[in-house]
Length: 236
Ligand SMILES: Nc1nc2c(ncn2[C@@H]2O[C@H](COP(=O)(O)OP(=O)(O)O)[C@@H](O)[C@H]2O)c(=O)[nH]1
Ligand SMILES: [Mg+2]
Image (cartoon, rainbow, N blue to C red; front, side, top):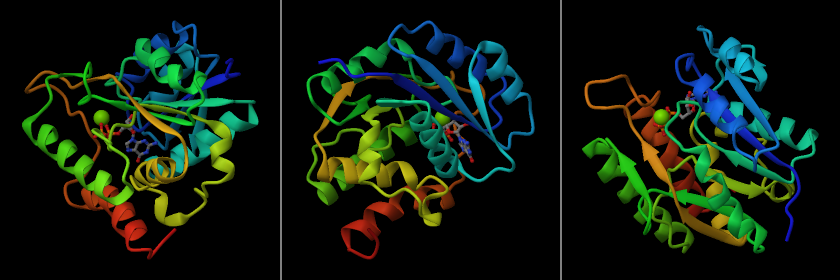
């Protein structure tokens, strides 16, 4: 089965040292037809670096959160004819060479393919102990909430058929920060044909630069909240 145009969407907030590399890798990936970087009000050279590397850059006027950035990126991707949207971090922790793995199940009729560092064949480099534990615990909760046997619910490396967004409403202000991704995955896992494939997640070497923009407690709550609210039927 052919799947039509594949557009990669990478959110980036102050990733000037990493985004160029991400875009170059995406450009080298034959499976990707177009790359959109959503620069979320960065105060550094993120947009210039992404553009210089050959991406189309959408600029959010001010930092509005990764969810708001992705929402804008998905809209732009669909406006440009995407049949499939690939999402990955703008911080060079995912490996674009693995995109064909994400596309495989889509070609076989799946709607949503989640990358997992923890399924057989998945890998991590330099993952901090805290992340090792919390990503697994989160996945247990995700499984319990959705019934989908997820092993890596917080992994932001995934691909899906763009038209599932006709039936998953992301236009909700409460999804502007880190909520949007678990919200999307929750709906996909419950209502669409969803698969998981192994991927690699790379973290900077110990003592090196930061691997996350997440703020303790606030951002953690932001990724937990959708599961709890959807499971309890308090939001949909
Ligand atoms: N657009 C946008 N991107 C963000 C924001 N926060 C994080 N990101 C980007 O989203 C990606 C993943 O974020 P990160 O904080 O590294 O998440 P983690 O790796 O899952 O801990 C990175 O490319 C960030 O630059 C934000 O407020 N706006
Ligand atoms: Mg990161």
